[in-house]
Amino acid sequence: WPSNEDKPTMMLYKEFKGWHAYFQASREALSPFEQCNCNRVMNGNLPDMEKSYENRYYLEGNHSLTYITKAGLHPAVGHWDASHVHKKHENLTSSNSLRWSYNWTGLICEYLTHLDPKPDY
Image 1 (cartoon, helix red, strand yellow):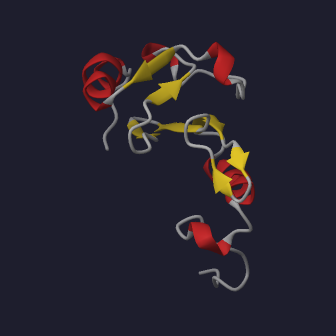
Image 2 (tube, rainbow, N blue to C red; image 1 turned 45 degrees about the horizontal axis):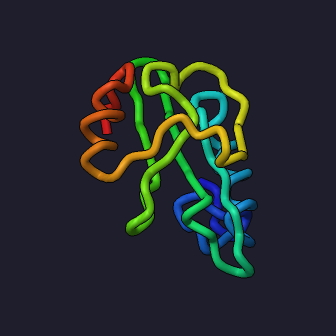
């Protein structure tokens, strides 16, 4: 079993030198099973959560996992139609071309219910 001293573990974000380093390492670790519609816009040392999004869709065999960020009062946003999230996508980094934007109720009722396949977790 590898020691945490050898390299950071993706379970501990703070072991990385910022979100971008964490993002790259987690993408490599989850490849080729994950599609990520993710972008982090920084405002100084803090993320600008009004312009940032992190939506991860993992599918390996019959097992799927979905992680969608909704920060505080800001809506959850993304580029991909729910029924196509597991197809290969280019990671779009512009908030100008967002396809959807939901509060909690809309995210659950209008987006997550249309994921195909439905996530296990």
